[in-house]
Structure formats: structure tokens, C-alpha cells
Amino acid sequence: MKIKNIEVFEISVPLVTPFKTALRTVEKINDIVVKITTDTGEIGYGEAAPTAVITGETKESIKSAIINYIKPSIIGLDIAELEVIMKKLQNSILKNTSAKAAVDMAIYDLYAKKYEAPLYKILGGYRNEITTDITISVNDVSEMVNDSIKAVKDGFNILKIKVGKESEKDIDRITEIRKAIGEDVKLRIDANQGWTSKQAVKIISRLEDKNINIDLVEQPVKYWDLEGMKYVTQNTYTRILADESVFSPLDALKIIQEKAADLINIKLMKTGGIYNALKICDIAEMHGIECMIGCMLESKISVSAAANLGAARKIITLVDLDGPALCMSDPIIGGPIFKGSSIKMVDRNGIGFDNMIEI
Image (tube, rainbow, N blue to C red; front, side, top):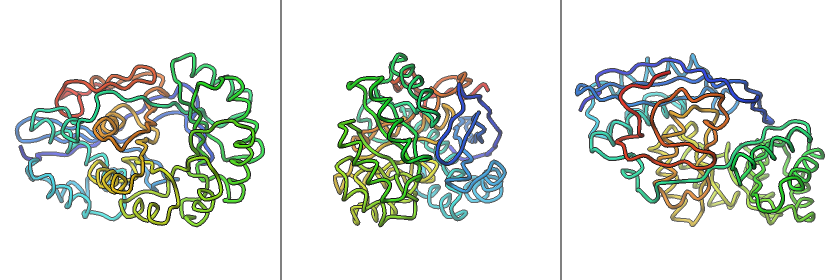
């Protein structure tokens, strides 16, 4: 089974409501889909999310990286030679992690198909079902409260609250949401780099004093400020999750060694795909650090690849794969079954798609 062709095309899916964070506002998913065809007729699918404020990539740069750099480096290679393919893919161009991720997951899709097994079983097979949280975008307090109540009614018992725009108002947002949804729902807070280290400690400490019971706080400070994140981690009781600070296995190792965070968030768009994500899992497991599997604003194609990884590895104990739940419609046929907060793997080879995805 050799790589015969690599094609790229676009997918566009409107969101139910605008997705708002401290970094950006998005109204629809506009991603790049990769289709790899082999000489035996098998097809593998992947997806790249152009998130310029995080990875520095645009749709145009992703297409160029795949067609002009990645494709020439791996065309003609045998899918069975996974390590060879991944080394060439990763070395074909510097950074461009989302472009690499799209090709990487399509290769893993084909690799599992070659050996006639679901991808989550190839990667470890720890479980066949995982539970995701859902994101509540940053808005006025009343709107966030209403969105939180609706999410709970829709069956989600873990909410990820976007904050980081107005430090004082963030306390009101979280406090009012907790009052509205009660104590049985987990609250995760994502500041998206929006606070300074001192602001973060002040806000988290006040929430702790109020007994708001926060499960974790994600990326409270700028991605480059490891000293600041370490300060927050050491001066609060709430678990701190590193997200934008972690792209590579080396990033994860540095954060763990410096005790800059309690948890690591793995996103395929940052790691360059499953290959490096597995390395982060191994590093984290060696040090007893739990991981979250997360996503950018992505459709079911790439979120399904991430879900397979999340189901495969025991060290991944937290799941933030709500991309499909935020979409107005699901144009993707096949893959894991997304139903409310539940993501269930399917007993189909690869990621779980047929050889034809209708968009």
C-alpha cells in the first residue's frame, strides 16, 4: 500500500453561535481537508485548522506546505513504513504544525486500514468511549449563564468557560454560572493567555475563597511565560493546564521538569499530528502527569482522529473535543458517534470513515 496522491480541499461549516475567546471570534469552521489515495485504492482523511493567532497558519499557508513541501517528501512511500514517513513529514518543513497534522492523521487512518483495525485499537485501545466537555464562549454574564444552562440541559456535565478579557468581570461570570448550574457540573476555566500571572493568582484565589470549585484553569498567562505559569501553579490550589505553551514533546518535558503546570493539553494542530502526540503521552505518563486531548475549531474529521487517540491512551483523562457539538450541522459521514457529551468509537477500520466523505 503506497502513497499515490495527496489532495487538499476546503470545508466550511457554520457554528450554532459565534465562538468567542480572549484571542478571537469565529462564526464558522473554515478548514483544509487532506485526502491521501494509495495504489491499492484505499483513502485516508485528515484536516487542518488555520488558527493564525495560535499556530501562525492560514488556509493558504497550509495548502502550500502540504502540496509544495510535505507531498514531495512522502509520495510513493509504503504506508507500512510508518516511522520513515513520519520522519520525512516532520522534516519536510519547519513548524506548520496544522498542515503536518492533517497529513499525519490521514497516514494513521491508512495505517490502521492496512492492518484492518480501528485506529484507537492500533494506538492502544484503552477504552471505546470518552466524555467531552463543551465550551461556553466569553460574552456578557447573562448570556454566558443562559448558554451554560442550555449546555447542561443538552446533557453536558462538564463546561469549559472562556474568560481572560476582563479580569474582574471574569470572577462575576464564573460565580454566576456556578450559581445557575449547581454543584454537580464540573467547571473548567480557559483564560487563553488573557491574564498576567498576578492577575491569575488573584482571580483563582478569590474563586477558591468563594468555594466555586473549579476543576482546572487552562493557560492563564502568555504561552512564552513559563515563569509566570509556574508562579500561578505554585501559588494556587486549583490545577493549572498548559495549552498554548505546549507544541512539541520537548515543550511538554520542559513544563513538567520545571513544574510550570499540573496538566498538559494535547492538540493535534499544535503537535503536528498523532506521531508527536504519542510522544507527549509517553513523557507525561513517565512523570505521572495527566493529559487532556483537545481541539481547535475543527470539524468531525480531525476531531475524530483526536478522539481515537483519546480513547487509546490511559494517560489522557480529560477530553475537550466539542468541535462537532458547536457546529450547526454535521456534513461528515462516518467516524465515531458524537452524541451530546459522549464520543463512542466505531468498529470500523482506521478513523472510521468510508472511502468517500460527502461534504
